[in-house]
Image 1 (spheres, rainbow, N blue to C red):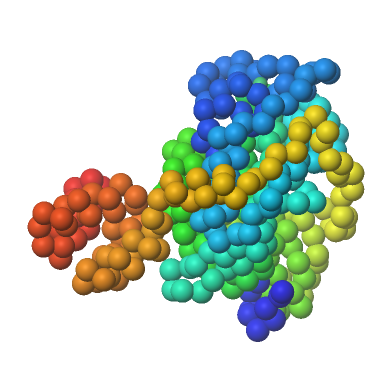
Image 2 (cartoon, protein in one colour):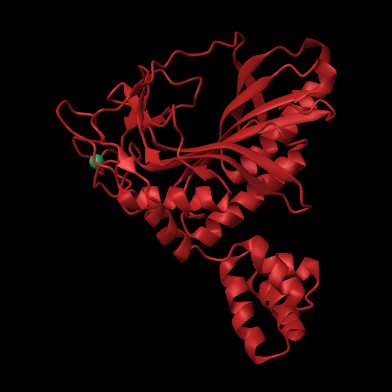
Length: 347
Ligand SMILES: [Zn+2]
């Protein structure tokens, strides 16, 4: 539902690489050798006759995320083939979820309490990386590295309920906090990408989509740039798809006409239907850690100032250390020392 009382409307589609040891449908390692095309096998190279086998750990990680984002989870896991012709997917289709996502109707709370709706959470495989030797626009040829191809991704689609780049940044911060607590994403090595829909009142809310923004900081930069650009050029904004150039710090037009690409989704019959039983969900819930929001509430209950509680809870390691120290000494003293002195020295 669009919020037409806001000057700025932003919706995000965030892609997160799950930190499993092996890929989503084969046993190739997700990390290791950086030599191009060495972490591959017939399955992730899409060779004829090869059959994908689902990585159970990746499903567990994605289910944890769905539960942490308060989603309804699907009783069964169904994968579809998203057909397209492009060198980053050698099978000419990407295994994704379309008709029935793993999770839907969730929410994530921002730091000031506003809740952002999560439309859906689904799993898919990462395509290969394309290497443009002399830059995106200038290269005469493109190289393909399939090391990344088949890595497990989750996609989180939000409702268009973010009302500023600041809220989008807070959303990403809260989301990364959840990933940190669940230990399903490697903040140092893992890839986080987003597509963003942005529109502003002055243009009559003409929807502009920015594709493929890589990295937490870049998402924020791209949104700040795009809102400013749309305000300055409000009268000539058109509905279009743009890309983010992180080196130049600008967005540029990719295509003007909004075409609903026909990917011809079909159910992937190579993958058998997996039931997500109540028993499985209960087992996952049992091992779910207490999340940052719960920690903050608990710390405030110990008379810790909200500001300190938020800093302590922002990192799982720091939060757990605080709880241990607070068992031994006065929690206020522990909070003061850990929040101020320890963090200062670590920095
Ligand atoms: Zn493989």
